[in-house]
Image 1: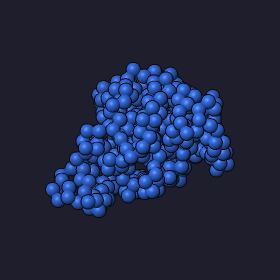
Image 2: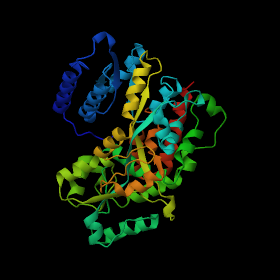
Image 3: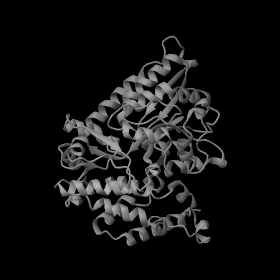
Image 4: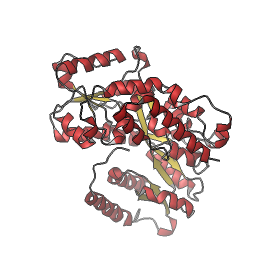
Length: 423
């Protein structure tokens, strides 16, 4: 998850605002005994106020429903245990969320009109993690956070470098900047999570991730069949290219943090920066005159094979056991209205996962729009790993010792340990 940049004081302030807002009656003209109250569980503190405004608008159009927003993600599992979970849940879809899906925690939403409006590619990514009874649609995509290589437009122009469309052109751009005494890519792997971006680009551009992880053993029973699929065999090219990318970072990348990287890149300390859209506002806060764009990192010599990396940053699900199913469906249908979806994604530098969505004109990320529109994108590899595998630590070790064989063997061993514990 990207850093929100919120202080404790700001979070407490937003919590107070949310509490005051939720204390108000949904509609003064509706009696309390006719109002259905549902809870929305969402895990992004930075959008609390935005969702309060959406909730207020929804309640004005649906005076018989009141929505309580809970942005403490830690309440989710305890709520399930107490058999009192939130009615509507929003998540960044990953293998962790998929575990709840496969257990039947979420209701089937395939009958909602919003399901027919969703981009088939985004639905394909959700379904790739597995479906309840191999048929149900347990989440609707609301926001795609697309990431690529952030580049300094002025430095590219100054050195006569075009946005690369092939792997060799990318290497040529790095060599040009290096020869001019400029750091091609600013590295920040003191914060290990930041390495998930370049490794994500390298793996997503060389491996069919959804297919690969669908074939990996998930249980002890799967391991008995002695599967031949492995990181050691399938991720060798990706890991080699990842190490090549690291070679174009500054020598002290291992001691530089995400905050250091933002400050250095914003001040012209490198031509490129491998971060997601969450970094954009911080960069322009540091340097309001900075002009940046984003391109998908090409991994082959065929430009048509290039895809963008995305995260299903926000999806909506409804808990199957809720006795307020119809009210929950009405709320989710409101949230999935194209006008609501498009407005949210425009504001938060993301992309709409709906068919024929409004084009995001933000010049900082518009370079990724054609790929999103055409469905040429893949999910960040980190979303496929269970929390028990400390992936970011392995990335950091690889970045420091450059031992690709040990890294891939470690991934295989860690994956098999987790599978062994699963019934």
